[in-house]
Length: 188
Image (cartoon, rainbow, N blue to C red):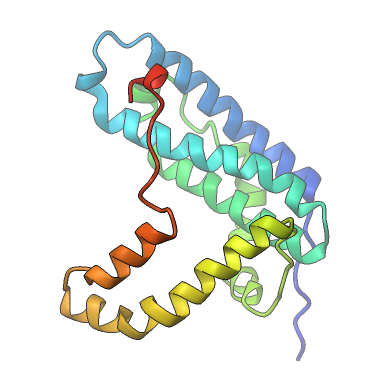
């Protein structure tokens, strides 16, 4: 029996995401009023993580509009981000400055696009990256580095819990991975 994969519904994704955005916005406003951030590090960490996932989800709506496969990937990511937000909120709503059940209206969307059958079928599809020529070249460079340098050593590093070998670190440095800094105007 051939099972038909769920069709992506980007309007449902946008509607569900709007619920998550509303929660994040209210939690962020609540956090801004906290007297001492150091006393709320766990909440602020979770808020930052959830806000990042919600913002990525927002950008994935545009990606999802580029095709059926892209839409499926976008719906799955958004559903997972909202489920993760729910798990961070559950039982801690007061600490976030929101009410109980805030994500509940998105439950149907989350259930549909986090269904194990749907997620498993994502492995059978291929979607283009839609990167421009420069970013495609960057992606190819990192892919080659991963295949040539990281993959041959990855299992050993993982299973033996060893440090990352210097040749990998040096290779990443040559690719510019450690040349990042925070501008002074933002505290760097």
